[in-house]
Length: 387
Image (cartoon, rainbow, N blue to C red):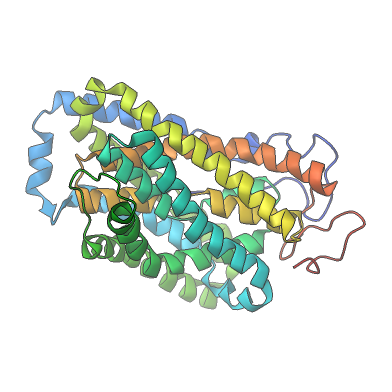
């Protein structure tokens, strides 16, 4: 997604109320109205499905495994620009960021999946497909769009970049293992009725390798070459803005096709979308609150606390949709749950930008960002000393 530009200068404390001014205005038009575009794509898909009742059969003829080739193309397109934004070169800073690094891993790969598992079973115990879709969303951790929310909240840009790079790479190894654990092993250990539903670890791993591995390489290699030959300014100020809209186009194209296929099920059960949305709303609010509290408790200054909270509260809904479609098919309830994810996440995370700015003033006395380091608390230690 295209990144937002902050009009306030870095490192300058904002007066009360000024930090919140024009937060939405600092988002690009595409990002600002993303829930609207998703809603329009959903409606267009349902209409397309009504006009072309044999669309599902046509797409099925162009199938590779469990995924129709047009849908697979949309999934790959929406993942590539996101992964081209990830600053893989920043991973070398991890030794100096041990507190931030450890907190992020625990929140993203222990707390987040466990919380979504609990919410999915609490809200959707009688709906195994939607429940599974939610768990898949919970396992897909933060991705580059989190940099938009972090920037709006005046969080530590470099810290967020490191966390996004870390979790993007960790995801390749962890996703399929955790998917098998939460979808097959843990329910059995707890005696939960899965209604005969089990997931093969290889099915999940294969989908992750295709829909995360391919765009990851496509994002990493051009970034490495671009930075070496043309420099960071050209790559991030000229190249990335040109390819950024491809993510939105790929996402909307995929949503249109998914809703065209699922139109009858959606119009027959509109309350199912509401049931899926409720645990997602609880999840984002709880994850952000817990993560922000953890950042404060371990002594991180505001900039890093904001980066930690947004990376932990955000989910890689592109990957979640890809896994749901790749493993269970485009007509599955899991795919529907994946599509509902960004519809809820985007407006909630924009709202949490305001919460972060308010909490920063309340807990730190000022909202201040210094690129490459944490915000300094009034009367506190120098930037970097807290962690």
